Image (cartoon, helix red, strand yellow):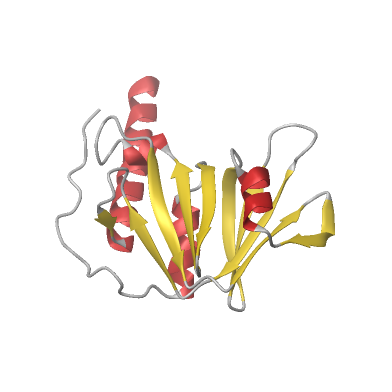
Length: 169
């Protein structure tokens, strides 16, 4: 498998992404699993295991890191109990760890990430947040722009299609 050379250009760290781009980031992490969420003052750090994208940066990479900057709202609603809104970050982390990202959408200012759980206890839920910005990093902590993530995502899709075409022939 070919590795993709990332970091050809540099977007300045701290340049804000709009809400549509925030939603797009989580849609590009489709099929990835949450590893962790952690609050640090007003920021919420996260890690998402998504090997097929991460290995395009470096073959032994398996995840990306990110920070929801100035995250004023950070909630989780379980599909089994939509009336209860969980706001404690440790409780959210315990629920969301290992959940697969299915889809993200935008509702006014909120980003809603649908997460599929495994097993009968936790079928899944919606991770909701409002933040000022999202910063992304590779496994070694190098800054990744939204455009670079889009290029990786497109490369992963192209590779998957080519692989399927080879199997058919």
